[in-house]
Image 1 (tube, rainbow, N blue to C red):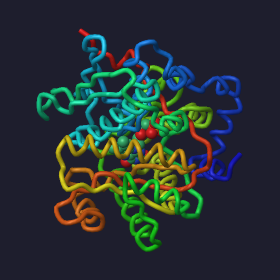
Image 2 (cartoon, rainbow, N blue to C red):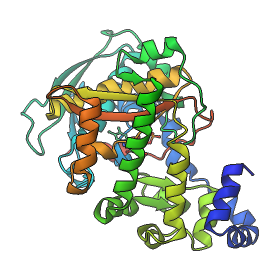
Image 3 (cartoon, helix red, strand yellow):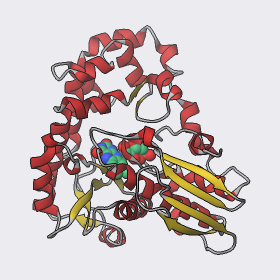
Length: 372
Ligand SMILES: Cc1cc2nc3c(=O)[nH]c(=O)nc-3n(C[C@H](O)[C@H](O)[C@H](O)COP(=O)(O)O)c2cc1C
């Protein structure tokens, strides 16, 4: 057992967990939510070039794993893409800024995946303007119009790594490659300030009941919940199952700041945020939906470039969120990271991770098609 896990069990009442786990060993051994992560294996197995590209695009990073995307097939070579209003985050993303960044990640990954089969994608963003419910993009797939994008090779290995990173800086060549997509911050004092800022933001969100409640509502605890809803914050596998069996991991526990379960969340982030050797930041002159799509496209390329360089990333956007309890920290983030008139859009940890990753769940491609 890893030290981390031992510490965790001690913190949340290890004896009980061991008792529960010991009596339920064979049950726990079956608790990996295979069906929900099978979507990763199914990517690229479709005949239609559009479905194929979408089956990769849905593996894009996105806030709270809401998977806000929908696609309508138009004719034989077109797609109309939407952001699903039912998959909003009204507390932590009241203007849909982060979700639109997620749409940008999705669009960029679709274009990258299409290139792997030689398809160019003719994109029109917000063809009917940026209003609510309007399509985010129209895309036409053109065979033979693109050569494969080398970033495509890194898609199967990508994922958000919420772990302690090694105490060494990214290699200079990696920093240079990543610098094409985001600002990479490696200066020791700046990194120390960002650790403090991202920790303060994480804690402020956790202690704001409405914002934290939105996260708790999206927790999928154990295999049954994950497979019923392969989105949100998946807490699966034998470890979390054993906590759930012991009654230490429930939504009610997670809502109570006095509970051990809540304190466990705090202790996890209190441990991993200081273990961050570098940060990535994107700030933009504009702050409209078109800008957010562009940020997402850049972030997708950053994420895949980092994966290709053996680096882990972990967005921590609490201090960019637009609600009253975050206003002071948001102003601090703006002062630290944005130029005059700019808006901070992305802040992420960057470093060498533990080299393992559990793929996060996804709905299969059929779930995002909304043909009439
Ligand atoms: C705009 C944006 C904001 C995000 N904010 C956070 C965050 O504040 N904390 C966090 O742990 N992950 C954050 N993420 C990562 C998502 O939670 C993650 O992409 C999603 O759960 C899917 O998992 P995957 O990236 O491992 O495929 C963010 C991702 C995006 C694109």
